[in-house]
Length: 155
Image (tube, rainbow, N blue to C red; front, top):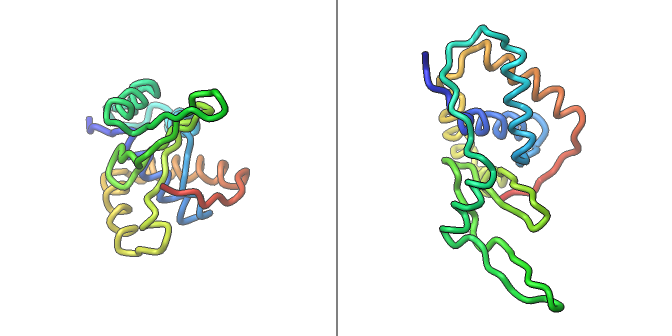
C-alpha cells in the first residue's frame, strides 16, 4: 500500500480546476466532499493508505499560533483579518474568513501566468496518482465545474 495524502489530492483538484475552468479556490467542505465522492467512485479498487487533511479547527489553530490574524475594533465590534498568506502545502495557500470559511487557493504567481511554476506544481501533485484515481477525480471535477461560475480569487 502506498501513502496518499489528501493534501496531494487537494493540489491535484486545484490544478485541474484551474486548467479547466480557471477556478483557483476550493472551500474545506468542498475538498472533503470531493474526496469522499472520489473514493466512492473507486469502490474498493484502490491500494492507498489514505492520510486525510487536518481537521478544520486544527488548521485554524495552527494559523492563529503562527500569527496570521490581526484584530481591530470597528464600530464597537472586534473584528479580525488575515494578515499573511498561510502556505498549508507547497503552492497551496489557505485563508480563513470571519464568516467561518476555510478556503484553499493557488498562489498569485500561478494565476498570473507563470507557466513554469504551474508545470512544477502540476508535477508535484500529479506524480504518483494512478489512472483509476485520476479518472475518478476527473469525473468528480467535471460534475463540479459544470455547476460553478468562474472565480479568480487567489492568494
